[in-house]
Structure formats: structure tokens, C-alpha cells
Figure 1 (cartoon, rainbow, N blue to C red):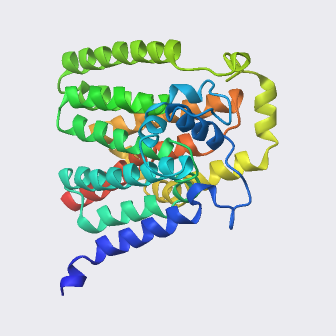
Figure 2: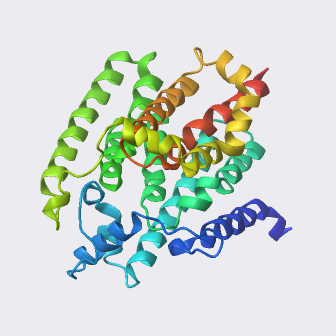
Length: 320
């Protein structure tokens, strides 16, 4: 009975470890592809350790300093340190996501199902522990959602600001607070969002101006918008397969429940707020299509915002 009591926790831990360890440190036993940007984050850890970086420290990697900075204090190799943090932060985000769903009175079975759906997804397998920092960002996304639901504007702002030091795509979390509280307290919702936006822009400008650059030739050589990038992405097989796979089973589940989800979108602040943040994420993905090599990481970062409306459907159905 003691083991059965913790059955779901054990299943979750086993699933989580099984999925993230397959590609840990960019392991290529299954996927024969070296993560391109991981070398820049590895070099950033070397920089913070006072070593000579093996690659250039350049935009936009140099803006994303928090995880390399923390990793530099760990007694492991650069890649292992980054990916241990990714695993820990991602695990903590799922614990908080459990708490968020409990707060929303989501049925227990649905809570575990949503967490397992997140874990066994293609993006978690493909991106979580390959030397990027996106996985660590989930913790701050989860904190921002938790703070919003508990009307804690200070914690929300702090989560956004710290998250921006991990990666600037933290901006997808900003609309959630505004839309969720807009109907009930319009004045405070606008004011708090505006303050957060001003602080965020100021922080990003400070980071951009002061982040180290070891190769001046790369200082402005990033995110060049143009139709040539769009053409490259259009004919690139991995662009399409990562897009489709990143929606995966979660996208299918939302499609199957779309009538109930969109039927309650106007009356359900949670669903509307999630849609707002998902919309920003999708816009960022669309921009990446024209500026760089598009992949599924931005779509992955919207997973909590896709899972919560799906969970709220079950809450609505339970109340009927």
C-alpha cells in the first residue's frame, strides 16, 4: 500500500528521467545531430569560470547569461552543469504546475495526465538537456502563472525579470497577467503589466549594453529578417517536422476538445489568458521563421498555456 500511494510520483520520476537522459549533453545515440547553439552556452560557462572561451561570446547567446553563470559555479563539465540545471529547473516547474492545477481544482487524474503528456512530448525529449537554456525557463513561467492566479503582482514581476535573464522569450508570460485580471480589476491589471513591461525593457537594454562580446564581428550579426530565411525554413524538412511534432499529442487533445475550450473562452478568464500568451508565443515562432532557423522550442514554451485550458475543460465538465 505504501508504494501504491506514491505510484503516480514514481511513474512521473521514471518517465522524466527516461526522457531527459536519452539526449543528455547532446547524446547522439538516437538522434544523429549536434545541437548547434550549445557550443555558445558552453563557451559562456567557460567565460564565467575565467577560462578562454572555445567559441565566441556573441548575441543573442550573451543576453542569456543566468544559467551559464550559475552553471559556472558547479563542479562539473560545462555541458553537464548546464543540463543538470535544466533538469532541476524543469522538474521544479512540473512540481509547481501540479500545485497550480490543484489550485484550479483540476481532477487528480487530469493533473497527472497533463504532466505525463508534457514529459513524454517530443520537445521535452528533443530540447530539454542538449545544452540550451529553454528548459530552465519553464520554472519562471510556472512561477509567473502561480503568481497571477494568486494575485501576487510582485512575484509575477520578479518571475518575468529573472526569466528574462534566462532567455528573452520569457515575454510570452507577460499577457497572461493582464488578460486574467482585466475583467475583475482593469486598473491594477494595466498598471502592473505596464510597470512590468517598463522594467523588462529597461533590464533587456542594460543586459544588451553590458553583456560580453568576444568577437566584435558578431556583435550585430544575428536575427537578420528576410525572405531568404523564410525560403530556407520552407524547404527545410526539420522545420516542418519539429513544428508538427512539437504540437504532437497535446495539439491533438486540444483539437478534440476545441468546441468546449472555445465555447467558454469569453467567460473563462483562464482560457482567454492562456490564449493570449500562446498567441505571443506563436507570433515569436512566426518571426523566427523569417529571421533564423525555426524549430519547436518556442512552441514548447507555450505548453503550460496549452495544458491549462485543456484541464479547465475537465473542471467545467465536472461542474455540469
